[in-house]
Image (cartoon, rainbow, N blue to C red; front, side):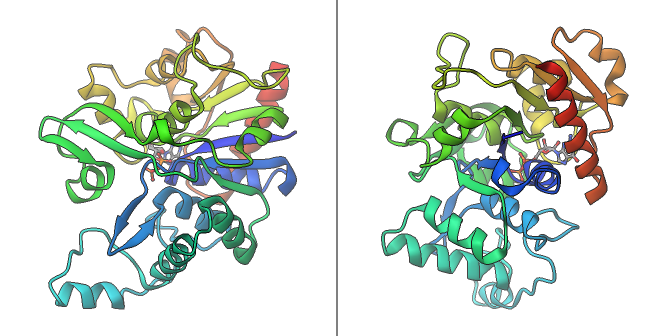
Length: 313
Ligand code: GDP
């Protein structure tokens, strides 16, 4: 089965890892959000792309879910001592990634080429693609003004109340080379359990998948699309997804997730603890344990999702 996974950072990376351990490398493409990318200290930082790559390479910090395992923080400690900004934590090994990526971008290489080379160096088999080679920037519209995503997420710890989102640069950006080919060849598309507003929507908007009427399909056949809920019992496993739904006046639940992607979905994967509310879902539903605490959880969930997809066709 050729599968394309749409992913953000932590939730997306865990799911992508499960598929990477289940499918042969050439059958898996992961398209990653770059709306969170930003420049800091003159370096080009791609938090979601790096989280996915570190996770697939077995280099990720298992406690935080982001950054590298066995990381050291000497550069950061020095920056702090010198009075520089220390709100965005950059470990020493992680800094090496950003330095090399920035050097390559400055010499004219594309983000998708750089990502391909990094994946090769890290021994990652599946194809990992940034959604675009051009910058797209997620802006969070809040009661305290418009905030670039990392300022909202890390510096302000998601405290401002959300009013909406916009993705700057979408009009000048196009899907990265390889994304369209992967989607056309896909037997299934999985929307990972990532934040719908800030991790998945930038990808969907970039592809032009914004409503039933607007969503183009470029292949002769449309593969089934299945989403995995990032919400369990109305709560996000991590991060502000539930808070965002609530602040936008939407009750956070799996019903909100189904509704969010309604024009795309052929199926939804929901936690067993949501079995009662899941009775209201009108599309095929897989009820299972969707909390991925261990590598074994990720692999089991990936296998179950693939069986679910097969049962749909
Ligand atoms: P970010 O860019 O690092 O915030 O990454 P994502 O958007 O990919 O991940 C955040 C989302 O992943 C949150 O909404 C979490 O609820 C969800 N998430 C994290 N871990 C899990 C998990 O084990 N299972 C499920 N179902 N969702 C998860």
